[in-house]
Length: 323
Ligand code: ADP
Ligand code: MG
Image 1 (tube, rainbow, N blue to C red):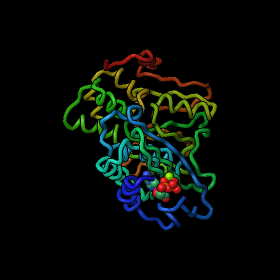
Image 2 (cartoon, rainbow, N blue to C red; image 1 turned 45 degrees about the horizontal axis):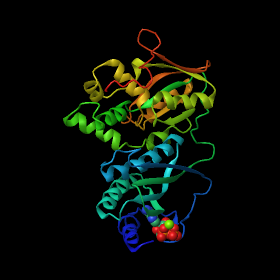
Image 3 (cartoon, helix red, strand yellow; image 1 turned 120 degrees about the vertical axis):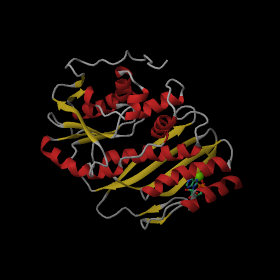
């Protein structure tokens, strides 16, 4: 490792990390030594982002630092896990202090909020790429898996859907928005907030859970396949933000963003009817909006039903509303 990379790690990563008592040995040795709390199961996930593929060239590096950690924490949230540690692989074209500084600011802004310690990583020269691995804990048997949905379970989502996709359309010049609406959509695309608190509160309540990275239809289908069930979604119930309503005035493009676009990082989960009343505590006085969008059925497949009870087909695959 060259001196420049060493200074970069030391200055922008090693010295900035949050301290945790369960980190016996953090950054600086050949590997980290970590104490898993007695009786807990370790939960691990990894996700990475490559410039040009997962974020546009020219994206603010602090947004990249935030998002690469956020998408990982979102996976822990979807498992009902408490977040603890992260490791980071960072590839930069040059040992660029401005980029490293901004990246670490975005990364640690989010890490601190959830008490996550960066305990190691690797820094190399190459195309701008960031890969994060996270670890967290759940009590054995308490993880929220994809295979637990049963016919009759009600389907819910957190927050609003379609904003991430609209943010991408805006970034790519396919959608027009300005002022606070543009800021909101950009924020939703670049700085999603993982639903960790909700995931924790869903332990013992949700029968299945997934985070929405590829769009509701695709991600819910993962639950359906793993659980060997089907679902009916009432598209008129999908929660949409005021910004999305304003910026995408036509119904079909709006619903297609909510159903198929991805990048929302909200949670989609199923709840047995008997446990639905317990959701009042999960919503935490309305601080996390939860919306019922449909029901699990025995018949395999995903049925999207519109207001008149007809089948909603959406746009033809590949059709671009904003082209
Ligand atoms: P090695 O050659 O043993 O892999 P390195 O020189 O790559 O060691 O790294 C030195 C120390 O710095 C290690 O503890 C490693 O985990 C840490 N480290 C390197 N890059 C990063 C990074 N981007 N973020 C956090 N820790 C890092
Ligand atoms: Mg190394």
